[in-house]
Image (cartoon, rainbow, N blue to C red):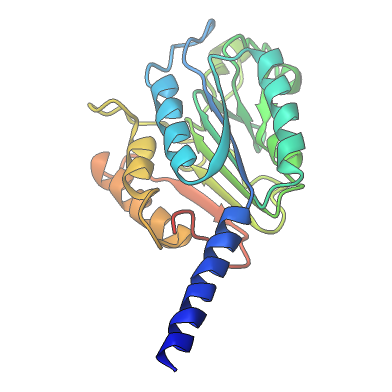
Length: 245
């Protein structure tokens, strides 16, 4: 009887391991820092490198891009859409400048120089657009370590606008912004910005459910910045999510 019990446990362990290894995880990581028209983001590339390494340890097939202009960012995203279409989990991480305008959120390539609201779709990548490219994945995760104000407000002669929740989130989606709508990012003394620092601390913790992990991340960022930066999350997950087993 004891031998049978041991055999059953072994089979179960093999089944669990096989199921975990069969899960396909893909990630696109972009870090933009060398901006041409607006202040540089000194830590963005280092943040992206560190997150890419951590995701690799979690079994993600990671594609990275650094200091990308508009055309290379669009190409990387299109290639990522093909990978995401057959993925169990697709994760997009971006560090750099963000932009909020007219209720929408955008990611800023290093060569962006929009002169009016009508230029934004051509000069930047919308968060909605990124999510649409990920819609084929069973679970979609987006992490944006970027400000949510408008770095081009003076050039465009527009007041700063806040961003609302994206319209294309859909089900089984988890979105993490480094700060609340309209907020800025607080620099830190370490090698990484507060959100990335907190993610690196908790991302690899085994058997830590994603919601609980993000609550720890939010607390750490709040503590590190004296409550001046509070990460903002949106979740439409239908099941518990564990990134580290």
